[in-house]
Length: 468
Image 1: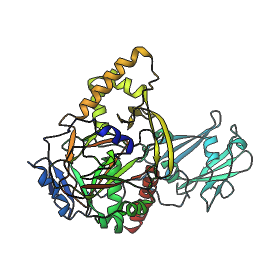
Image 2 (image 1 turned 180 degrees about the horizontal axis):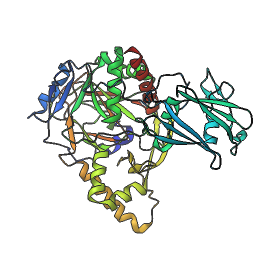
Image 3 (image 1 turned 60 degrees about the vertical axis):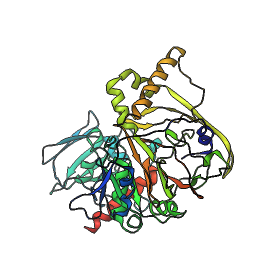
């Protein structure tokens, strides 16, 4: 988002981000209406014609993409675990655990306390609310199993506890819950697809997203794994992002309202309406919980040269930095910068402050988020003073790498196009431009969060699988 706070610096910006790496459209064989953005075009003009091609879906329809079971669910709900049968079950009372093996040779240990905590009988697990009815403070963590038996066909096992309680566990359910042997969660531990200027950009038709579950699913999968896409043929009027938000769940609000507007006029009354270049950044860095997906709907576009959106995959470039300069990567993933914004907007006065490392890692040491926002980066830097210069050197190097031609994608939105991207991964900016007619350039922006997107993906996955 090109916010009020950002616009204060716009007049001082002298950079004009450009790239000689341009694209044109191609339709994939066997995928009617699926358009891509490839490295062949000699001009921006060819790029802007892409939305005239009917773009219904994405390159990889994957109704079974998200397969990990919900953490709490009925035993009889459909899962994706192999239909393997139990071969053997043994009690290990000394270690308070159960040793289970299947007919494919795999073996798994299940501690007694975990099995009892996850008993799915109606006394322990509410069958309608699908929620645990027991409490951690009442759990006997030292309890023992007296006996264990498996069904004759090997489809389930039964545990008799020393307090008289009985629990039953289906084989396929046990197979899906195997601690650190469990299949990785494809949403909570995403296998990202890094990209550079040669990204195979995917296009999705606006009405198809609203009306077709498969297209909506494919679009959301693209946003999770690749982190960028174009939605085409939206009406050239405000309110269209709310329609997408309602299709997923709802838009995330910010200080600037349910959506925000970026306008450029020949006689600007506010710096937000200027035509200067905007440096690569992530939105709302001064929020503790930054928005996850950003959408920019082009309602009106200048006919003159310039005004291209520029984007870069912050994850890909961070991995390049880690390879080339591990110490710089370590500094940017260890020491946070602080961010702030103050003003008055849609919901009244606000003063936002936050703290984020430039590169945030998850519990596995994998890149989870990048945060760069020069306009809202605060002077406060709570690091050892002798590391200030090395930290700035690392930040400077990372930002320069983002602007390398092989990393920077340039795309000029056509009216009716919506640029959607992962705000915590994809840095975005804008080339300068000139307004040569009344009206100028107008974008409407809005946000989605992963909580709602992931929920919708789970729901759609189940729905589409049941239709097969």
